[in-house]
Image (tube, helix red, strand yellow):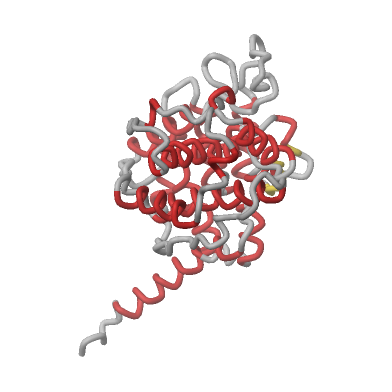
Length: 326
């Protein structure tokens, strides 16, 4: 939850603009707020407005527009240097904060609150390309098997969760946000709300349909909470009969991974999304554009990482040729 009382008014206006005009998700708006709070607190130290060095004790409510106008490109680069050298922030983290700062200053400039945009010359740090971690086909089958065999009152729910992750490549927030009304059983399809509040359709295979129907047959019908989370509409419920939380789903996945003897330091809910995408590409011969649509990627470049996984396997196959080194 964002405490707007701690922000200058122009920050709150920007957050409202991000939610309403840019149609950013609540999570994105929350990240913007966090990034800007950190940035402005650093600026109070950097510009010698405060002698306080403990970020948690620095108040930015009084950071006025006139002071904001003094910020230069070099000041922003100083913040990024602080993140890299003092905070040990990875390139991906710094890139996200740069994105926030760029959008923020572009907004201020468009609103004529500042005369120049100091963020225009900021460069995004080069990021390492990492191959996504994912479960093998055998490990995926093993995970489904141990979840199906568990002796627990929530067995059907947990199996449906694992099945949807591994078959559909859902994000954690997308799975938690599923309402029963989002499922069209006549067409075997599911509507989810992804990043940027973008709606997309995911077609469900027989395994998903069966897992969902098995769970719905035991899903609580009485005493389900009617609350701000829309628990009465939710597909997946907790023991308290309210919409399941992100953390609870993460716990379920971690528990089942441990039961399957899989390394929980390497695998997570997001790695199950990687697994679904990789298995579909490698075994289903899915077109890269279709995979992009399924995963809800804005850029095809994001989806292409799964083709790189396949290329790495091809390279490995050549290296393992028995004639290599003869």
